[in-house]
Image (cartoon, rainbow, N blue to C red; front, side):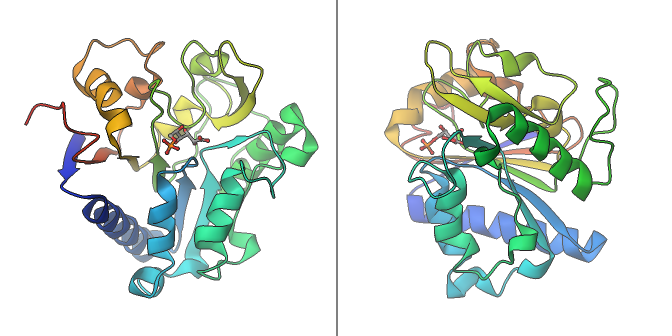
Length: 251
Ligand code: 6PG
């Protein structure tokens, strides 16, 4: 089930996203004693993370029962200004006092392939699954929430157009390449993302208006627009956009 909400301002967008995060966390913790979330990187989520760490929300979430992963990571050191982990550490993890044991970053210092293997083991460990299983019908982790942004090229996480990871059906975590570029990334795969209970896209700014229209209302061509293949099998799909990003969408 796909739901699209467009907000008049960034403030309203981020408050709505924080409300969804806090409500999902409360429900998961009440139901199963913990909340597992994979965070998005890039620039859009930072304001959400700062809001979640603010006095307004900090006490609305039982952070000791929250386990944070990252949907993707750049192949940079954890203290790099480009690191998705560093952005979250500075805007949420440290300010909210979230314990290191509750946070699972991609260990890029291990090198590309080893970092992906280690992340596969970390995800398997928290969800009590077999990290070595490579059968396509293996049991998949079910995150309570996967938070995603979207690039102007329609990528989500580090699932880039025409990239090898788009066809990955047996691993949780893989290296990936951006077509036509040397830059290397690490990403969760579609089967993991699409097995989650809730996927929440957070999209803001006029630069995303065209791609939002193509992804949400245009022809289905996921190799070109990877965000189109984010379709939770049993979970909810929620798109939150500000007015600028949603300007071209049918109302
Ligand atoms: C990353 C992100 C990526 C991001 C989009 C949108 O590592 O960059 O995980 O998937 O969500 O590129 O980025 P912005 O929010 O900066 O527009």
